[in-house]
Length: 213
Ligand code: AMP
Picture 1: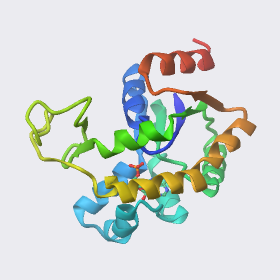
Picture 2: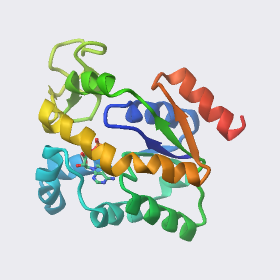
Picture 3: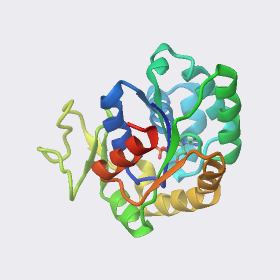
Picture 4: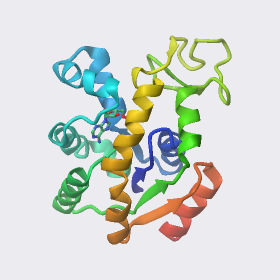
């Protein structure tokens, strides 16, 4: 599968991507995870993007395209990919379209998780992330077995810098201004599949219907 996942931060793109990965071995590519790994490593790139990310602003299109142009050439992408958090702007979507045309590849669809704002706000302020492996928890709906400790790798679970109320407000505003126009972009390209939920079953049903199996 080659799918772009669209939807505001906290819509559940990562969770859906992980479920789809298990279906056919497609790889999840999260630009947010790539950038957070660079910050954790203390690389030049990480230092460059740290402040923008903590405030909930986007990093530049050039920087993201540099990363993605290399990443999509990796061997594991041949099995398909689930793009989680990319593209995030119209210029990124246009650059992706050109890149895929050059590689002779086509997206199967752009899946929009159309989730109401109050649900998103509540989900993000209660979300916690493992500082080591990135596993996602929720203090209300999916707490770890031991408070503050990751079930998967035993490292500390934290609230991300960009999940304070102020940063979340900003990320939702940035989404509405810069990313929401991609819904129309992909509708015009005949690629949009929109679902009003991030519950796995209806999402999978919509994708299967779209892919014709
Ligand atoms: P995410 O984990 O997808 O919510 O991304 C976290 C943060 O990483 C965003 O708020 C941006 O600062 C940055 N980021 C991730 N993907 C992109 C992208 N495609 N374009 C610009 N900034 C991005």
